[in-house]
Length: 424
Image 1 (tube, one colour):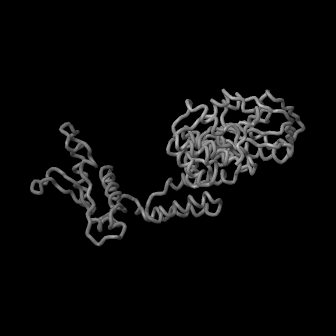
Image 2: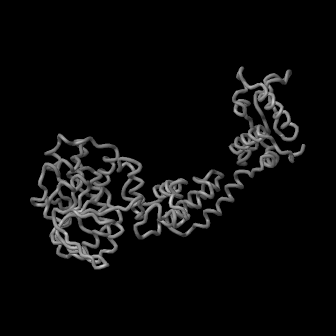
Image 3: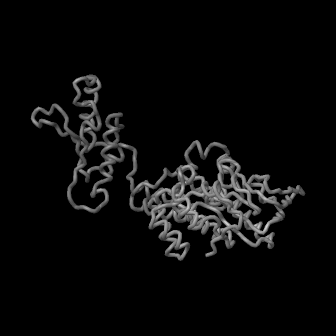
């Protein structure tokens, strides 16, 4: 029996199916001593085989192709009636006869060889960043177990190059800037799906103070993950409102006046050499509606939920350049996630923020506007309580199964009257 003959399309299709099935057997894995057979039903290869309206010429060509395959390979036809040897039931090959004959006919290497060869792609990126090292370890574990990695090798290399750039990025950068910097094409990482795959890696192996359930959509979650690496689809802006003065590196001076909101593009924040705040209080606000509604004597800054790198650095600069500021307050939703955001703000900036307008009295007062907690809310509330954070209001939320969005408070209340702060 020769294995040098080149198989036709039908034969190649069947051989490919048999090799796929073989690589799922114990014989292939080497964990069985039994003589296994690899079987493929005829209808998997030729779906119309039993149809009365099947193309007779095509059917005859198929059957002849399979009979020819028997003459130069270990594949055998199993007939529905062994005596008439007319209609096919399935195709069979002893598992022990697959290697190397069928692989040579298919021009294909065993999966174990392919997988082991792919490890070199990942080895080239080892030691570049913790997030990449974690990803690489997981992929090499899959490959050594003769399982498929997440991505094809060429794709994996593009993904790792993209993740590597993001992991080391220190300034705001846009998707298309990354794409042209790495691949000479502004649309490459989006058109080829590299960006979404890089986000998958970051979400699985990066470390964040938030999770997908904190966001209303996957798109918002992905954007939040990328913002942790100062990566954005379009330029982002930092919105603030209050009295003061901003001096830019080029000598431009911007006078700030309360009641006249300002938005500075995030990539220009690094050009601010000095910011002077004429207020004793800084108030960060979680949601845009409340930011636009509130008029206080504090210097107000819109956080947009979990604050990104640009807002974090801006707050640090204000803190270090304005020792006159006595109070750092945060106004957010009265729900477990709102308090998680407050804790995230304190941890990421190193500033001792306190809650404002987030006390139990408001939760009780606007009980008619509350919503029920979800499972993620309960988990976060329990985590905070175990850490000794906000036990009174969080226990109340758990006991009464309710939470409150901040917009009703900013609409109905004047929280600026005494900057109601809960000190913990």
